[in-house]
Image 1 (cartoon, helix red, strand yellow):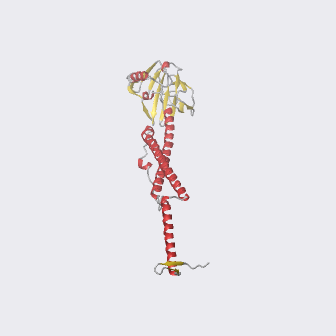
Image 2 (tube, rainbow, N blue to C red; image 1 turned 180 degrees about the vertical axis):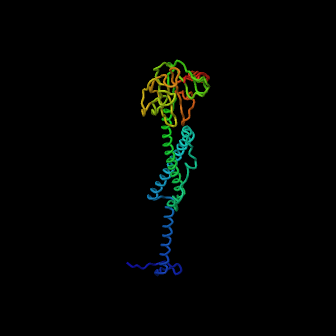
Image 3 (cartoon, one colour; image 1 turned 90 degrees about the vertical axis):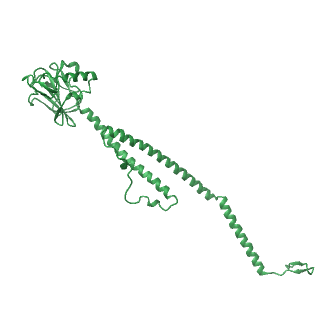
Length: 323
């Protein structure tokens, strides 16, 4: 079968053989290929614009999840900052105030990190600002938690010391009210029972029968239990720590020995009239840093308001002391 192709010539009204034109063929082929390429690229661009590949879908899902996790993380950081701020406010405004400790300055709690740029490794990325900001918040939060943790350790130590202090200070009347004959004399100028001269009386005299129990007014250690101090006769001294010492004089006998630890309310001795004493009674003194102070200010531990006011009224009378 002949491969010759013919075309109809309308001018001559005859069929003429079609001659092959290689240049035209090349041109048409080039046009076809170019048009196909344009169509192909256009199709790809349109596909990329309006359709996602499986990998793109996976990456987009991952980005959405990362965005969600970032928002959740920031929400948690904000909540943690609010809780910590509340603890810091209570720490400065209640705990440290109660235990007479200086508040921690705000700039100390939120002080940044000096020196080298800690966040340089996060620079140069699309989301560098977001990453650096979040890391700064986390670092600041961690530092504030460390500062607060140390502060609470200090408060715990202060609380334990405060509890110990409150147990040690001489805070009860050394003789029970029901055992008293009367409260004979208070702290201040009184008439001396032997010379009748007005002089300063440094303690309080509790009149009670011989053998009446005497109790430690606070926790401490027995430092003296002897009769070697002039005028006191048999007497006991308890070192309560924190500069406090209580003294119990003119005893009949002891119920403790030197070096013994005692608790508030422990029986330490019995009323007598030894030493420079006119009648059976307990002469009671309180020292702070080796200075005598008025013991009447330390009876809040076992007296009601009415009993304390009555004691205060009697103790203020300038009468005659018993020693």
